[in-house]
Image (cartoon, rainbow, N blue to C red):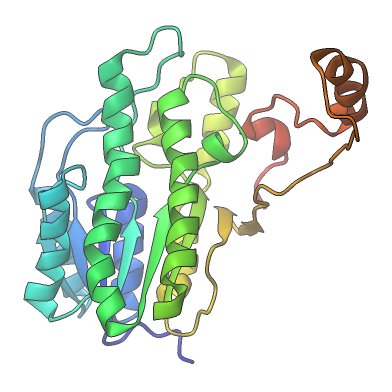
Amino acid sequence: MSTSLAGQVVVVTGAGGGLGRDFALQMGAEGASVVVNDTGVELDGSGGNASRAQSVVDEITAQGGSAVASTDSVAGWESARQIVQTAVDTFGRIDAVVNNAGIVRDRMIFKMSEEEWRAVIDVHLHGSFFVSRAAADYFKKQESGAYVHMTSTSGLIGAIGQANYSAAKLGIVGLSRSIANEMARYGVRSNCIAPFAWSRMTSSIPTDTPEQRARVEKLQLMQGSKVAPLAAYLVSDGSNVSGQVFAVRANEIYLMSQHRPARTMHRSEGWTVETIGEHLIPALNSSFTPLEVTTDVISWDPV
């Protein structure tokens, strides 16, 4: 089947800049009509500038594509439904959703406030569900559709100072997996991408130490345009991939592992607190996942 997106309608959230802009431009270049959704808020969720979405629409139309701006928030049930409704009202249908919108409120767990926790969960996790749920009615009825959700190695592997972001991003993996299982009978696919790319979101990474500055320099070499082709493929009719988690780093594409039993140990008489300490933990210890962050696991320079 063709990987062209001609005739398809794709919603891209958080598409006013960074990765989302790259996704929207790629979808438009592949022939899709694009709903460019962005509230225009700052990285921490404050403010709002409606011109960001429109500027990306102008870029797509200048290249001969078709697009419309949406400034509704993903973080509200009704506003998220309006994003999808914009696609249907403008182009007559919806074929794919790229859940990319996000904010960051980085803080160590012992300093994080309730508002910092809720704000990030609302946009990333609730927002991904709300937009997905709104599109699901159309996908089910037409028996086709595709979702691509942005996750992060902050949740998949580990991070410091990002408990809210990490929790939301790992939650999105569970959401995507559930969508893939529940919607498979209707021909609907759902996958995740963990992008390595320089954007407004990664620009918040501290640069106080030589190690942090070196990390940022590497990230600046990884462009969102390297991630966009995979997203476009996953929403195309040529893809039958579903329920998977990918990562993209410059010219590298990774298929990430997902949770499965690593080892098991049986005791016919059952377990006690003492036998767990004496037998189970020593036996399993060599298979424990170490406490690591992304740069510990993927430590080589991008290719």
